[in-house]
Amino acid sequence: MKQVTLLLTTLFALWSLVVRMTRDLAQKEVPSKMPDRFVVGGVYSTESGEGDFGVAKILALDGQAVHVRVYKNKYPTRPSPIDLNSLSLGSIDDPDGFGIGHLPLSQQGFSQWNPVFVIKDEVSKEDLEGYEMWKESGGGVWP
Image (cartoon, rainbow, N blue to C red; front, side, top):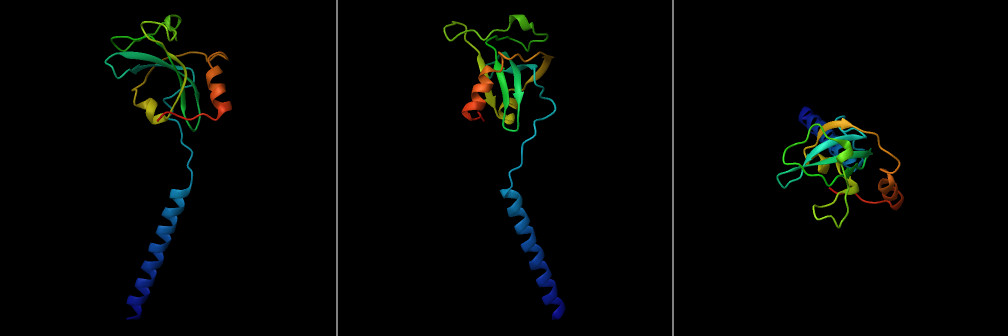
């Protein structure tokens, strides 16, 4: 009888320990790590979700988001190579659409665009203007 009591007490203690550890782990904030395949300055072809392809450039990576510039250019097939000089943000008045200078996306959100790395480009101070405004305002992230 003593062995059964000892065994039950031990099992209860172990179970309590596991429950506490699980609860503590669930409450900890774990910083997200961006995958190695995302590169600051990386220019990626992306699926638009409308049957064609677009181009996005990673401006910055942090634990919160993949910060991208989305160009207005659209292609019927995945572009490779990409002529960087032909990329444009356009304007809201352009009949063929426009791009977005800075878009903070979750890692999962950007991954859903099925990005394929094409080339690395420099990120200029001008490229980062929207990102800097986002940081100053404490902006959010699109899922």
